[in-house]
Length: 103
Image (tube, rainbow, N blue to C red; front, side, top):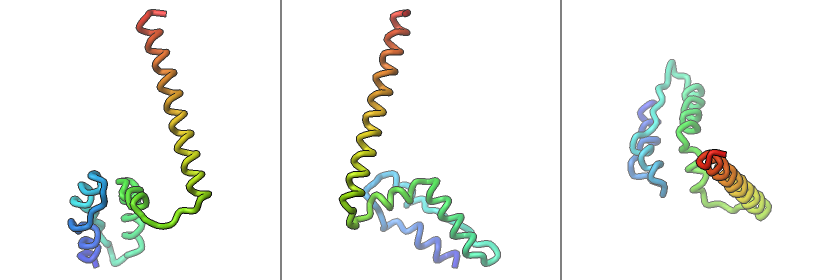
């Protein structure tokens, strides 16, 4: 069973469009199945995928229908994130200008 899991998750032919995913796909994620406990191995695999970011890349690359309400929510969240980062950049700029001028 361990060799099957290795071949599924370390196959170099499967690539998504992101270069970081290609690097992680090349490295692969390996999980040892201890004492025949497959459930524990799957939870460990899921945790490793979340921490390495592969799960987010796979979700981003999925091509399925997104409802209009979900599109609006995503657009609103992206806009809020953009405005927040612009505000932060503006605040940092004013702080740095004051610091440079010695005020």
